[in-house]
Amino acid sequence: MNIEEVKSFLDEIITHRRQLHQIPEVGLELPKTKEYITSKLKEFGLEFKECGHGLVVDFGEPPYVAIRADMDALPLQELNDVPYKSKHEGKMHACGHDAHAAVLLTLAHYLSQNKPKKGVRLLFQPGEEGHFGAVDMIKNGVHEGVEVIIGGHVGTIGQGEAPEGAVLSKKGPFMAAADEFKVRFVGKGGHGSSPHETLDPIVAAASFINTVYIHRSRELRQTHPVVITVARVSSGTTHNVIPEEALLQGTVRTLFEDDRKFIAKRLEELAKSIANMFRMKVEFEYMWGYDSLHNTPDVVDEIKSISEEIGAVFVELPEPVMGAEDFSYYLKERPGAFFFVNTANKEKGIIHPNHSAYFDVDEEKLWIPLAIFIRFLERHGRL
Image (cartoon, rainbow, N blue to C red; front, side, top):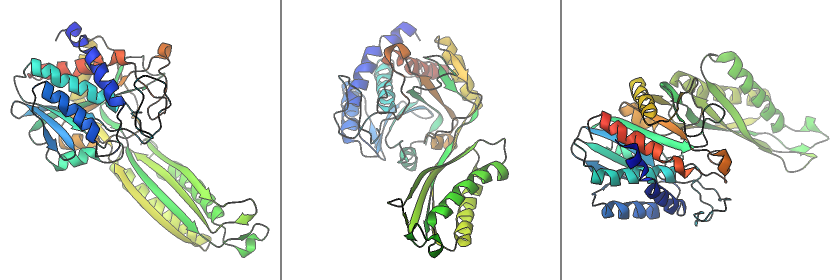
């Protein structure tokens, strides 16, 4: 692989990225995004097929080395003032998926000009932002015939831990499972001056919050990364009326399945116990989200070696990232690895985190994931 040749594709990546950035779509149904991608694949003379709600491009026969990009956006109003600003009200590519799809589309173009010697599979996946797009594609057999899979994610990542343009990953447990819980305490409202005549749900809610945070520090293995956050507390409408009910919502982030199952069970027990203590009703709901992501160590070693070959700094993170990714489901089926590329640039003002309404990427760094993908294919005898 010639690095200068790879960098010569940068303008194409940027063009694709800006076109996709203007037409963000949310969830599994991405008609305009898929129309753009398929039109370019046809221009490259490539065949593609539907796989669930996603797209697959195969080169050669199995076994395949697979590379995945997500392509969905977020329900967020963009606040950037750029020529390629979102044209879809209330929707924005605020997590770099437009760049992921642009890099993979450019890789497809590269492979159309440099025919792989053996099987390669490119996955254009919808619905990463909470819609289980990976599960949808796996149910439709996207992992069949695949021997190894990799994927990357760009953004303002690793600030303070890694230089701009660095590649980051970790062996083993890398990203957390992400679940949601909802608790509603239903009491008896009344005048704020007469709490003895009421069943105050705010007291129960406060007790639940304190108990949950104590539970985190006393009942769970301290060497296991766990986050339990109550992020929403909603109750009452004015200063002197005790309300009928209080609603709490929160998130649970874990790396290990035993911790995850224990917490789900324990939160419900605590909610019911506290409701009983304060003589009120409770509704509890636990929503299972994405599974934790565990990288194959040998593949992370490859990503590290390749990063150094192309002149990018590689940072092996000492601790897992407590964000979540549905790439985890591919890694439950096949060996592989997921990595980050820090595309921040302080001089250009590209400093805002993923999921910010001001999120952007330093497009000049988008050759890095392309180079990693090409070199990975070379190492596996595909090019």
